[in-house]
Length: 141
Image (tube, rainbow, N blue to C red; front, side, top):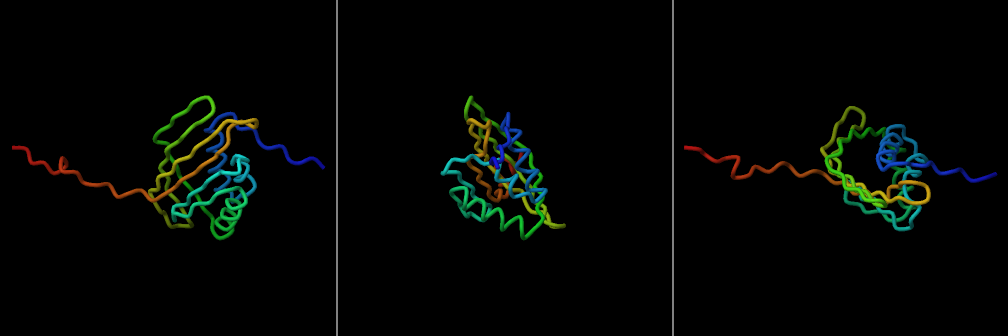
């Protein structure tokens, strides 16, 4: 029996869409298929836990998807792309059951390789509360 052929992601946006779709469906194998096969893939969860390597990522996402039904609503706020590297800055809102959490700030780093684009790094953390600057409180005479 031949090993499964990895999906071909033509653009970083295709990878990102597959990432969020896999999470929404609770599909661990589809979620892991978006990651690069590089030994140094990194994922930092909002808790601050940094995971390195596919086996560690696989186990962490397995635990997350097994324990809860997770929906992530995302919107891209910035993007930088070259021929082989792409970075997306994203705002996310998590929905677990009826509970909504967020916003979170996430950064996705994608690389292009033999099987198209893949996710090589994800960092997600709680967004800071908007600060009130002095200019917001200026009194005009």
